[in-house]
Amino acid sequence: MSDCIFCKIVKGEIPAHKVYEDENLLVMLDINPLSKGHVLVFPKGHYENIHDIPEDVLMKLTSVVKKMSQRIKERLHPEGIIVMQNNGVKAGQSVFHFHIHIKPVYEDTPVSSEAHLRKKLTTEEFSEICRTLQ
Image 1 (tube, rainbow, N blue to C red):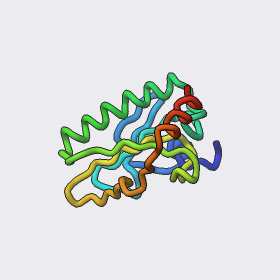
Image 2 (image 1 turned 30 degrees about the horizontal axis):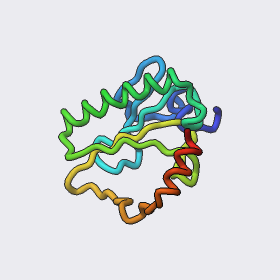
Image 3 (image 1 turned 120 degrees about the vertical axis):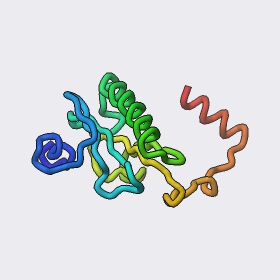
């Protein structure tokens, strides 16, 4: 896609701080990181979101996410790691090229909890949702 920033990075039109690259995937430092070591893992092919990415590409990408998370843990020693992926504007997606964030969490990393936003559902609501998704 010609106007996609990640596609431009893959083509070498925009510089990036690359941490890992192979024929299918790229891992780079996030330009606006939450913390030291915050990286983005994405396919070189353009797929907008989780609904578009082929399963085989997703499986390769997930393997690299695990390896990179381990490398971050061993070399940067965070207290925790957030792995997240957003789909759609309402879900917080701002770059419409599938990517996964790996965000190391340190003592001073601001992390907001969503615990106070969680819903209480009745048994009937749980049952209805289960029937819908089965």
